[in-house]
Amino acid sequence: MSDSAPEKIAYCPLCATPLITRPVSDKPRRACPNCHYIYFTDPKVGVGVFVVDDGKVLLVRRRMNPEKGKWSIPAGFLDSGEDPRETAVREAFEETNLRVKIEGLIDVYYNPVTQGPGASVFILYRARLLGGELRAGDDADDARFFHLGELPEIAFASTRAAIQQLTNNQ
Ligand SMILES: [Zn+2]
Image (cartoon, rainbow, N blue to C red; front, side, top):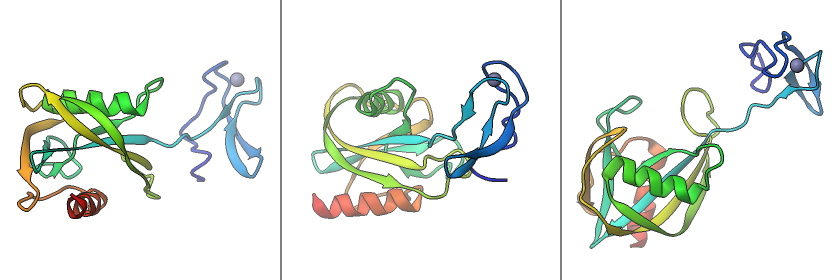
């Protein structure tokens, strides 16, 4: 089975005809033999936010697997029709109850492992704390500021690497 033509995508969402696999440009794709629909496997885009206040970084503890119980930066998936900056602000609020303001883009990361629920493209912003009362919510069961020199166990190797790089630059 090709990543570009998942056979579990069985029916045309426009006319309900069973899809077939056929070459489209350079790749096999699931396509409708009745109308002109082609199924494109769009990448999942994740957005995270790095908030440092008074020498401490805002982290949330993961309530769910993968990496349940470990800490990460507030992050979530880009929703259709949403500016990634809005995603960053929204996820920070949902997971920590804090209001933040985006100050800039840190980097865009590519994760070639696209199996499972993870994002293959991850956008990381730097943000400033505006206010609010810190309280964990949504996918987080705890939320705290940690001194950069005293970080807890961080989920995901890529997040560990990014936080390490960012703390070195503070
Ligand atoms: Zn169709």
